[in-house]
Image (cartoon, rainbow, N blue to C red; front, top):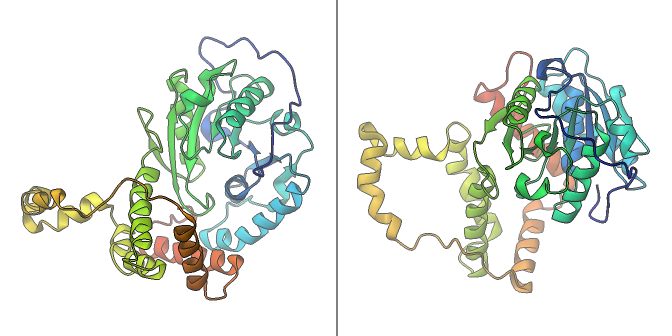
Length: 341
């Protein structure tokens, strides 16, 4: 979906009466047809991923040129997916774009919603998807921050609605975070986690809702500190990026920040690290409150990124990023023999 997109209101049907415990019509491992609703960067990335894993994909987006843009996105992602390793029956010919939302989900065995991050839009669209999708089929939202409890408020059968939060681009980054809302059936969460694993994803199944989930909260802390340093003239955009790519980012590609810090404690591990560096937690090293995003900071960040791009087009940067991520995955042994991360 584009930012101006709105639900189609293709159906005014009364939502079906919810069963006591929704039962998906297929096991996670037997799913063959996936519907992707929204064909922007995230939705299109999901389309590319599912096609590469050998699924039949139906896609819908209300934008007039959505089909053309989606095909371009899939074509751009395909070389990276070929390097990762395609499923034996993978083909871009298995993609069908539909004129209506109802057509997209009428035979779906799993639905991935990737509409813009607008709560009212999410609520309305998920309620419409719930009314149109076959009974018992799990519907997942790609939301990057909204709790499912807030999004499922208008759905007739909220028990089958879950969050399946990917990382951009979904066809390349393995992580997906799965969590339900207060009215989600725990069986739907378990089903979705199994499905994503069968589809080649690395899954974190969360047992409670956390605003921003896990990875986004960690990213956000780093992002806010970076903005403060730019705003205060303490570092340039280039300095900040280099500090990660040539510093902790190299370690994080192998193990996360917790184990990385544990190694800083030597043979004493995390306990020694905390004893030694714990007092520095009181030092003014971070400022988690977001800085004011005024015009000066906005321009500094945008200009800094333009300088860092050094004339390279977005498409060139995407291809460079994809090659780099694949190289890291391969170098760290995280590509399975079938090519899936």
